[in-house]
Length: 201
Image (cartoon, rainbow, N blue to C red):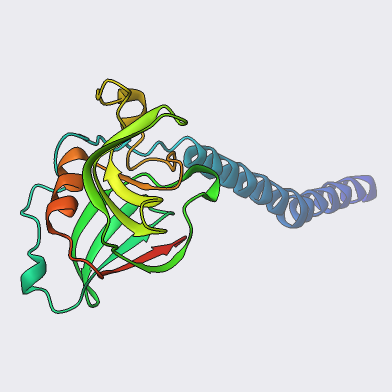
């Protein structure tokens, strides 16, 4: 009888030990492992998330709505965002229009506040860079830094490989490239002396 009681006591003690080990050691460890696996899976999903690439028609205007009228704007100015690769047409603090652009690679587009200068033209070609453009308007150094269309070759043909980067990455020599339609609108309408702010943000 005593042996049976001892045996039952041993079984009880072993059972309690197993319960406490499972409750306070195994389960917390399993929960921690499960949490780590969940976090890892979540991080994997986030890294595999693919944003839909923008499709820019560099022949046409950036937006399907009409261009704003500078004459009806009280305080028009351009904000060029190097980060966004966009030109924002502003009236004071109000956004009126957004244009795709491509600024200078290697931070070659100077940041700061400038103004639209008197120099502008319908086309140019730079023999040294092997590129030109249409519908250009100067905003710094009187013909050095410009708004203009996507680039053309020596025969006046648009360079598709360059134009396809519009709105996606900085790839110019320092100027601000625009779609053909946007550049034409700027060339024909932007007023002399209007403020231009180039920013990294």
